[in-house]
Image (cartoon, rainbow, N blue to C red; front, side, top):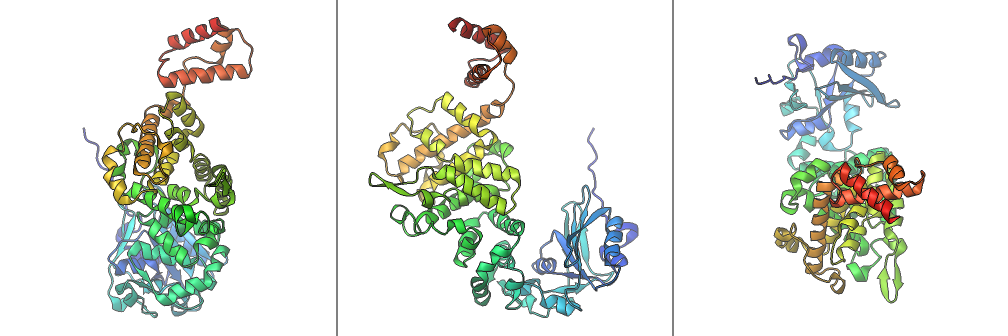
Length: 515
């Protein structure tokens, strides 16, 4: 029997009230401001509401009463400016930010906002056509322009798809707005006005005063896009990239003879671009994309792109001419340490810090395997055992790293051969940007990925024999030797030479005879 589809309820429209009426009943005079109106003017739904109220003595009480009515939780985000957030529970995780006017009136509040496209306000009444869509967890609004308080000509800038600063001090009062300008431009296909772009360049150094987690959030929204490299280059041209990542400053002048104008930074951008290409065309470039999506979140690639951006962070520090050749020995291990410090500075989650630093520290290993004529099961086992769940993120980074040495057109031409067995060639005699070398390296990446998705998840799983079996059959005492025998047993299981407990015990008996 078919189960009935569960219908999500709308917490805003109890007892026949409209959403605006519910908000007004618990807040009194209430204005919708900011990005919601911008998105509505573009004909888009929006994911959260920004509400401002006239200052009052019982402001906090109003917030908690509204949260209780909506079966939601309320918490203070910014005590200095009395910014509160209400978040819905369960199946309706809506978000509402509420704060008093920034000033004595809605007009003063508007003129303190960041960009003209956000400097809009709409006073809510019970008939305002504002709706919540429970199934999509979005809001929608249809309005007439004459109902909007638009003191800074924001609606005109929305029509012209232009981002303009409300005033010349918007970035000095909140430097994070400089990154937000690029994020909004990326999301809506807008251009930043020349005057505003010049203001960003003049104030770029201030961005390092922004809270690390706020910088992280804006960057991750940009990096989740398919065209993130385009926008990161725009951020760099405005002078922001080196202020956020001063560790990148020495890259443009390093290895210019090797990478061309722009040096290591040029290569970094190329790797980021290929990571964009991989995730946006994953069905074309990854024969195992269905399996891959079960192991990593291919819909949110930002953390993988952060690894691409930082993967050669230590190359300038490790650059040295050895026997007349520019080398970067140890840059991967050093880079892992630097990347970890950067991500801590930006308050990334611990698991993401571990993943990024791990793949950066090991990003030469698959290439070292690729130069071998045969990729043995034992070599794959050692790699998978060392990397664990970070194996596939490592292979994604290496895919983009190797693919960066040829043009997207050449990469497109070889995609039918990527999933095949590695070509039998000696890559040690080929230049770094050779088509044949790149193809061989990428084929090895696919071979490793396929092997890991088949066998890797069980590499830390149950053994068919344990330490007690080892000590009993080999007649040895507890100690490091037991662990070594178990690791050999795990390798035999990985190779498929031991498939049952009986096989494992028989193998142990043979080891005892050898001893």
